[in-house]
Structures are given as structure tokens and as C-alpha cells.
Image (cartoon, rainbow, N blue to C red; front, side):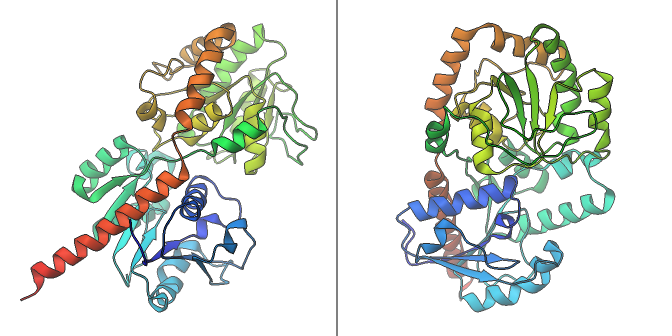
Length: 396
């Protein structure tokens, strides 16, 4: 066990409205709080102090830059290094694809996926260059590289030339207890806006509904999901589709245009970004969920859906592949007709649906943030051991 070590984490992704990386950071911090770690955890934030239940843990040291209006990249690359140097860290973890330019200690970097390398059309040229530059530099300078699935580990090895013995896989986790406690509830009232051609929801969403959870990106093929749902809606006249996630399409209005074209004006609800309790309640009340993508590093929403007792219709290439290789509601092809076929199988087979949901809850319960944090600490220990070994080799 790693003891009496000062571990630093660049935790700015926890601020504001956290998405995937922010939820990863909060999960790891939660896991550290639950662990027997006997050192200090220094958390570095860009903005102002904020309240969090974990801050009462005496092992946590909080560092606020109060630079919330500054570019996050500029803050990490320019403002953060002096603060890191003063903290006297033993190991630093950069959880979001990058590291500061001047490292005061051995470092770990988390690279969750390589979408900016493999799907260049999703980003403008400047943003693509920035992400590639920072990730490649961090992978080269880090003592160890962290990632979240075996297939991304292989991509990092092949594309970045990182030796496999420098890569640690940390599967993401789900708060199964929170989903279990909320399984009987409905979505609480929210103040939400609607996209063009969709319906706002000022009241709790009544079942039956299906849900898509996650930022809306081109690779997540909401266009195919809407086509499949239009076919399902003809036979399931009460079923609605809820989209919960920030709309990050190059043309955000294209979503509403397709909804209108398919005649789904009264059947599709866009909630935008929602909080963690709302995510839990939304999934617990759904008939099924969808998560379909041409590329993902992990894909946490399907596992959250299973924790809620709601089966997910998914594509291949997710963290679910590692957890459940023969999952029965995986689409063989990323096509509207195939999505419709698998979704009909879910809706038309209550017995199978319940069996899959029960098995899913069992498997997801094995994914805990404490286990994820333990793997992070093991990686930090290896980083220190690697440095000690290198020092002995270089000494005269």
C-alpha cells in the first residue's frame, strides 16, 4: 500500500458543470476518501472555493487559484506550475490528457480516449492541434499513462509508442448504492429549455420513455437514434425519447430540424446538461436507454443504466465489452434498422429485459471508485519505483 505520500491531482474538471473527465476526477477523489490511503491528497482548482462533502477529510489539501475567468489551458500551462512546486508533491496526476510544462515530481497522465487523433473531423483544426500536442507531450513526459479500457490502452501503445508496461488501466466505476436507493423514483422537477422542434419539460417526466445520456456529439450518432426511434414510435405511441446532455453538434439546430422532419415534435425532449441526482432518477424511470457511437474510450452511461435496472441498447467498443463480452443488447452494426431491431427486442421481451437488468446490476456492482482509486495509488507507487530504479542506474 502506498503510504505517507503527497499525491497531487489537477482537479479543475470538478468545477462548474462536470462532464466525463470531471466525473472521473470526483469518482477518484471519492475512492481515495474511502480508501486506507495514509498520505495527503492535494487538489488544485482554477477558480473560487466551493463546498463539497469530501472536503472535511483531513487528508485533502485544497489549492484554489481564483482564476476562473482565464483559459483552462493557459491556467494549467502558466499559472499552475508555481503552485505545484510550492506544494512539495511526490507524485502528480493530470487526469485530463495533459500535464503542465514544468513538472516538480514524477507524473501520471490520464488519456481517456484518442478521439482527437482518430476522428479529426469532429474538431476544428486549431482545437485538434492543441489536443494532440498536449496529449502527445504528456504521454512522452509522464512516468506512467493511465487509461480506462484495454482497447484504448492498445491504441495508446500503437499510436503514441508508449510501452505497454508504462500503461495502467483504471476502469471507471458506478455508485451502485445511489442507483439502488433511487430505483423507485421519477425525475424531479427541472427548469429546462427545449431545442427547436422538441418539447420542454417543466414537470417530472412520466413514463414510458427511453433515454440517451451524454454530451451530444457527431460520433454518438443521434441522427441514427432519431431514425430508429421514429420507427419505434409508430408502434409504441406513448413512448417518448429524452436526450440528456449538452448539444455539442457543429450545427446545434440540426437536431431540432431532424426532429421536425421525422414528425417527432411531441415525442422528443431535450434536457441539456443535468445534475448527478437527476441522472440517477432519469435512468431509474426509463424503459430502456441508448448509447451508440462510432468511437468511445469507455462509455459510462450504459453501465449507469444497468445500475439503475434499465437495459441499454449499445454499440460495440465500450467499457461494457470488457465487463460483459456477450451482452445481448449490443448492435452488430451502427445502422438505424439495427438499432430499431435491438430496441424492439428489449421492448417486446419483458422476461429477457428483466434477466439482463438483474445480471447487469450484479456486474456493475463490482466497479467501485475505491477500486479505481486503489489502482491509481498502485500506479503512483510504480512511478516512484521506476524513478528510484532509474536514479540507481544513472548514479556513478
